[in-house]
Image 1 (cartoon, rainbow, N blue to C red):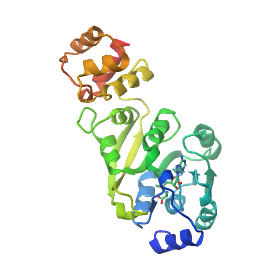
Image 2: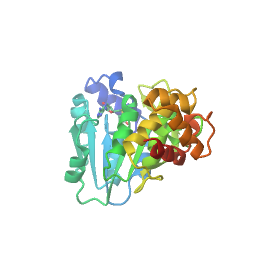
Image 3: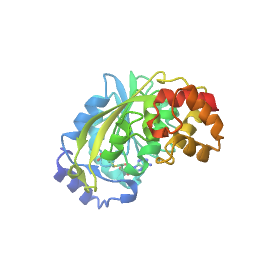
Image 4: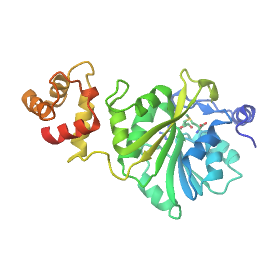
Length: 282
Ligand code: SAM
């Protein structure tokens, strides 16, 4: 079975009467070059793989060829019969029909990947939950080595932008706190069925053992980061005092102790500056 062949995928989906649900971000890959590359970037010798949203199983099959074991988490139970067919050649794949945002991943990893050298997440993510999924995977302190994921191109550019640059957002800071982010390659919209309105890109986030900066309280640090990007056109002083209710003099003192001007905007601050300010003001 050549699932990378658009006609094979179409045939299987048509025969089962499958209709794509936009609300579930169902744009399935039909470009035969993409899935092998994603699997190759993601999986090292002896690794286990977690896939979120296997769809018709095109990426799942490539992961199963490289990984010791694959666990694929799919929300849409209508895909069961299709996946039973497309994954029938592999005995190292398990499909779990659950919501990837709600499943207990820590328990799943402990149970399913005991004898693997490491665990990597590899997925063509449903676009409507890209940010919360990436944040959940990074913040849960799971024993995961990397996330190799397809996201919309705009999200990829934002995530991989340097902290402090124009393209960066709160997600950029969070991603760079937990991992090293690299954009691997672009994927045009024509590579999907149905074709979405925008292009995509594959990024790889390699999880760090230790964050690049030390902060006393991660929760408070991230509340400051969120506040800095809440009102992008305002100065740091105004947006942070408005959003977090911290008095301006405390913020002025923090800025001056770091030699930063009062007019600085939050989005231009580096990770180190944000960490130091958080430790001073909270
Ligand atoms: N991996 C397939 C591919 O590349 O062709 C399908 C990718 S499609 C962009 C996203 C998949 O995620 C769909 O199969 C969709 O049903 C599934 N999905 C959507 N929301 C989900 C959730 N909360 N948890 C798990 N899977 C979800």
